[in-house]
Amino acid sequence: MKTIKKRKIGGLALAGMLALTAVLSGCNSGASKEAAPSTPSTALELKDGKYDPPVTLTYLRPWGPEIKFKSGEDQDNNVHTKWAKDKLGIELKNQWVSPSTNNAFETKLRLSLASNAEMPDIISYRGDFNLARELIETGKFVDAGELFDQYASDTWKAAVNEDPSVWYPYMQDGKRIGIPILDYSYNSDPVMWIREDWMKKFNLKAPETLADLEVIMETFTNKDPDGNGKKDTYGLTIGFKNWLSTWMSDAGWVFGAYGTMPNQWNLNAEGKLEYGSVNPGAKQALATLADWMKKGYIPEEAGVYDETKAAEEFTAGKAGIVVGPHWMPSWPLEDVKKNNTEAEYKAYPIPSGPDGKAGRRGTANDNGVILINKDMKNPEVFFTYQNYLFDHYANPKAGDEFENGFAEGYDWAMKDGKVTTDASVTGGYAPEKYTLTFDGARIPSLNMATLAKFANGEEATTPFEKKLKSGVPVPMVEAAKIVQDQKDIALKQMFTGAPTMSMQMNNDILTKMEKDLFSQIIYGKAPIDAFDTFVEKWKSSGGDQNTKEVNEWYQSVTSGK
Image (cartoon, rainbow, N blue to C red):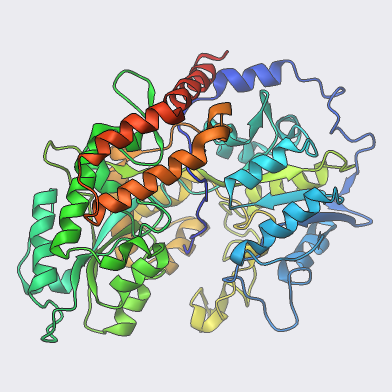
């Protein structure tokens, strides 16, 4: 459940909820398999589901610091690469290996592009959206949509079709250049996590509104909830070094209480896309945050805290509230009890604003992209690999090889005659993280639907359900039900196309202007009415043109033009 790979989309593009029916039917109806440059001239034959002799598939992907290997194993030689060769006859080979930290992977890949170095068969990427677009625009990769239509299994196609707009960020000239890497639906939609032992100590009621929440924050800030005799706690921890609406330690819900979501394009009442940071509701949200900062409800360091650092204030017992995904009990909230064995925390719904509005940042059904080299002789090899994972790993049947997990002795083990996924027994290895697509294969609707089933008291029956239940703490199940119950307040990024011409010219300037002014308002260094001047300047400095072009894009994808 520790799925913390965030999409760094720089405010340009992002996650969608539109229907792609007309666009995709237009792409598919005129597609000719014979004319597709990616169709192999001589397809390799499978013998009992395996290539014999084995075929090599070269690839690139960033390797995060959370990925660990057993002694003697590495990125090219591990339980997963052995499985791929033994089961499918596919030898997986990194073209080169680079960590994901400090933009090392991105830097090396850009240098490779600049020197016109040979690209691998496959690039799997999760990270900076701008780099994904740079790769697409090089012309080095095929129309993967045609290959997907031709080779993808029914299971994989059905998973993508749960939300066909996942294709949008990776399209160019009507072609689906990149295949979206699917994630679980609502996977990073936030709930409100509150120190339940502090709530009980002061007999506080659940916060249904911002007014209710302010009572709690006042108590947590000024009434010594940890009982140490010092004024060293505060109500809410947020971190907006990267942005206000983000994947953890989020403050976007404050804007949602006033009917908007900052740093993204939202659908307004007139059916048009508008930039959330210039909606009048953003002014009210900023005034609220400035008031909370002045009262000490949020940390003075919020502006320099990133998402993880801000969350550490909650796990360390300094803050009583943090807002983030339902899976936070797996990480980082397990540290709460490590730091204080008496501590308790509980998930609560996102509260509403003075007019009864509530809103949270909605997350996409995808979190990365697969690009296929136009010079790859046999692209069907990749589909053989990924189809198998969707058909057998994503939602395994009883008796399947992945029934208990990816590999015995890694993510599961036998103890006292029973299957366990306890990391203290298995060593905490996660071989699905070694796969080309980072998580093996995911069917978007499956995870949250299963957690909601548990919350309703239903039993786990399938291998997926049993595995999930064995590794999911009760607070996570309760939080998942809250996410599902509040699904109608999710505000997803509605512009998921490539940056428009206007954005390419002025987005850096507009983004800097926005971040600087919003920070100044929250810290009380600029009056709230400075927001009105900002909106005027934003519009005249390219914002109006951005809005025009974004809506032209929106019309094109919703009308099938």
